Length: 106
Image (tube, rainbow, N blue to C red; front, side, top):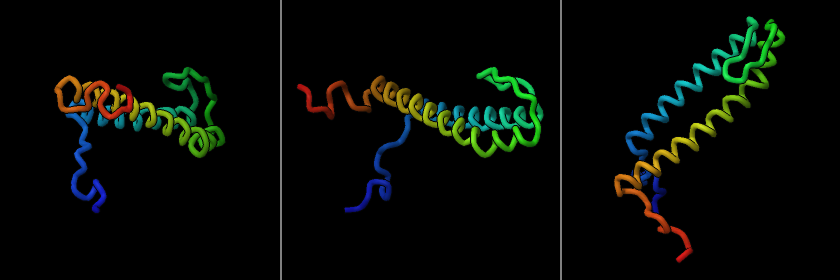
């Protein structure tokens, strides 16, 4: 038996969820880049509002330790939102799993 990814699998995102995933991915790149620049030059971090004086030490600390955590959390949140939107879009179009389908509950 071949793995599902070798023949498509049928797990494609709905068009709206695919668009949202792309927008969120671009937002993650822009936000993490902006925060890294602020860590080096100083200022206020976007969204969280942290003040930093900047400098090489702060920038490297941010780049090596904080940024990977921030990016991971943003990707997890973006994935959760994208999958929720995908499920809603598929249910609205009638092509996704319907309520109760795939569960053991009657």
